[in-house]
Amino acid sequence: MIWHTVRLWLLLSLATLLMAILLSPAPTRAGSTLHHAGLIVRDGEGRVTYAWVPFSEETIDGIALLKRSGIPVVTVGFGALGEGVCSIAGQGCGAAECRRNVCQGSAIDAPYWQYFKQDASDPADWKWQPLGASATKVRDGDVFGWSWTAREPHLPGLPAREIASLAGAGDAAGNAPATQTYLPEGVSAAIPAAPPDARTTAIASGILIVIAASSLALVRRRRMEAAA
Amino acid sequence: MREPSRPLDPRAWLVWATAASVPPLVGRNPWPLLATLCAVLGVWGVWSAGAAGARWRPLLRLALLFGAVSVLFNLLTAHVGDLVIAELPEGWPIVGGPLTLNALIYGLLSAIAILSLVAVSATLGATLDWSVAIRLLPERMAPLAVAGSVAWSYLPRTTVALTEIREAQMARGYRPRGLRDAGPLVMPLLAGGLERAMITAEALEARAFGVPLSAEARPRSWQAALLLAGIVAALTGIFCVALGQMLAGAALLALALATLAAGLLSGRPAKGALRRTRYRDPVWERPEWIVSGVSAAVLAVQITLLVLDPAAFRYEPYPSLTAPAIDLPLLAALGFLLAPAAVRP
Image 1 (cartoon, helix red, strand yellow):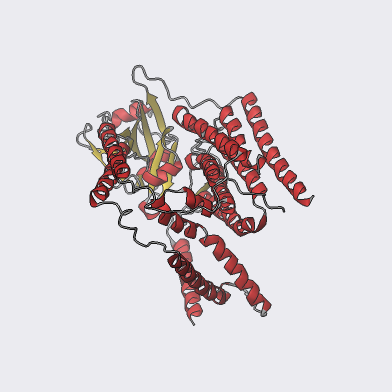
Image 2 (spheres, rainbow over the protein chains, first blue to last red; image 1 turned 30 degrees about the vertical axis):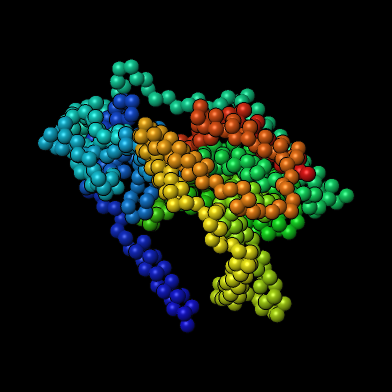
């Protein structure tokens, strides 16, 4: 009897899930009008990236804005809570650490990616967004900022038009995202670590083969000893 | 296969297991992970002869299953990376979105790490002489060690019991066909587990496990207060260090060290107050020296690299798939984790 009830419950749950998937409305498109939003990303060394991102929907969330900007970004999903940002343009933490604490170390001054929204009336006023990027609605003309910091955002207080200009979007009405990074004095562009050369890779492969072959040889020797 | 003439000393095994657990615990760089896995599987293959090895083999199979689940889970839930191999509809909860080669590779690396750690545990489980290990611990830690040994043996004993129940039921003509037939297997397993727990408890009771110490061996109240203060200071100090409050943390740890030393050294019972007899002293010969020495050297190399060049252990295939860093001295050092396989007494 109990198996029958459980099976019925499972079938009903699956049917409900299937219906929810099939009947869920497709994302709405707002005709041919394109909306735009600005984005400023400031890393730990003070490099500032400006982006001007077009979108056709009425609103998108903050994660979509970041991903559509074309800046390399790594996020991890937290189910219904949305997505956490692990790294932007190579700065941040690995996926495993991100799943544990969203890159927020235990020290008081440990930086992590903090999310801000610019006040439309006062561009110098950046408001911290406690609910995160997944829960934020981005509308036409909004400007959001990401800063790798422990406390103050240190984001520039520029109006949206100027951000579009700095991003290289020209008249701010383009249909492709524009992105531009500016380096502070004395700071060079972030350069990813060089991959190991062919000789090092060949030696490392040789070491691995030696370890694997030694393992096999030792196991085989023991088996032969046992058989003898 | 022939069983070894005698087991290695537990201290040598513990040093080896610590060294072998570092690469899978601290990072996902495929080079040290693969080197460790090859070495650990070699040691397992040499030392897993006999009944002890057979008891732990199902755990390795379970690790393979968990590894496969880890690969699938990461592929379906981590929609990050520049190499898209397939796409699921965005509307699907959790799994919807692009499936990337980056996520597949990270899942595979996690599976290798899981398999390595389980192979280390299985090797320890199959080779560690618990009675010797318990005798090596300080007197006051004996109850903890006994509890640990009982917990450690839980899984292999349950596996054996499950096999026996299945064989007994199949001999009576019972053929389980699916999940609904699990009931007749689970109930005797549960009853047998409770019965074994009672037998273990009675055996421990009969050997005076957990009885109060004699008056002269019992710590005085001021000694207990010192030990408690030392432990609290140590924990608070570690918390301060974790928060980056180095000065306060160092001061608290120094206080903890002084308090614990005062509590432990001043409260030592008179010689003969705690009587423990030994039938045979643990053997520590050339194989133990080689295994513990080589493993300690590998551990020292790993700790030095963790401080100087953590990238040697770490690797992230996100957002772009790049070649992982290679540290040749580390790889060469990890090869020496094969020492227990080479020096089996």
